[in-house]
Length: 210
View (cartoon, rainbow, N blue to C red):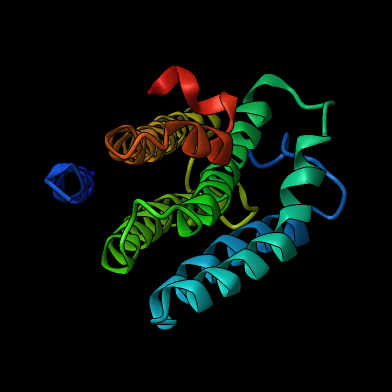
């Protein structure tokens, strides 16, 4: 986590320069969990293998849209006990990280205030943050699976709580990273008297962070 925070702050500093198993019951849970892990992992793999920024993002966006149904299905599950709900919330946080990445980076690609080199750095930052979140999701999947028989219920929930906290930290870091990048564009736009166009691009939902 410290290494990733260093990466995030390094990218931001460059831009700032002058220019529980029995309780987790859903429909076909094995397929759902595998789909969630695979979709997030495919986004990360695509990010690291396609070099061209726009081509890269189009592939990432395609992977995101294909996997989004898993998160939507999980979000719709309401009849979970407290322990299982913590698992559900952890998984959905990774979905939100993917969502922030795809939706906001898609807007940044159309933002004239970022150079191609800067967009590459920003995209790499998102990819690394999502990758770390996905690794935690894989660990969570192992914990809630029927093969994790060496842990008792208390130990299992202690691990779930830890993973939830770590994923939440990454989620908050991605939000911070996103809003700081947007704020860089807004500051550049102000110097060019072009603020309104940038505000229109990113929308009012982000204005409170500027």
